Image (cartoon, rainbow over all chains, first blue to last red; front, side, top):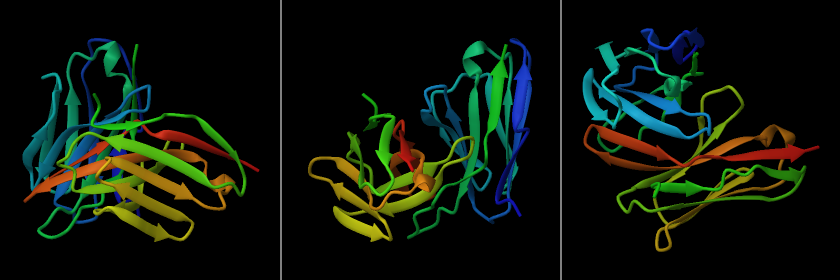
Length: 115
Length: 113
């Protein structure tokens, strides 16, 4: 039973299109994240939601809009895709509560290629 | 300057060798330090974490932190081909419900049988 699952695993699309990636976690965690891993394998945080509230929003273009309908789901919608958006997008979750350090549990990634 | 600096490698070693992976960091607000392992086309998974200066051992793996010099190390003893992966060091800041993990670029390790 997969802990953090993302769909789709692969996305190939044209510049200018809009696409969405979905993430679900069944670990009961209160915090979910989107990370972007570029072609140089650098893994950089984009967004974090704690109990459906946006708490981290790094310097990300407005074309990227996350949505968390509930604690177990975090989606990422990308408008007007550009070549530079090509990357692997990882969803992660953790339990962040008083006195605990939340280990990040990652999904397998969604590989986006923009042509 | 990136908050966590790491040599991307690749690093190639023969099976059985001792491997030393290193990072430096610049953010004094980091409270915890972690090593994640990422196999090809998979998500990273936590290998070890520590919050204080000194050593922490787990089987063949030892994590070392020196806060005075802002230096993080991971040692792998008796390396195995199954250890071939990318190793990412990371620093964590947290406050209440806020937690942010910042990663280095990762060092790609290949253990040759």
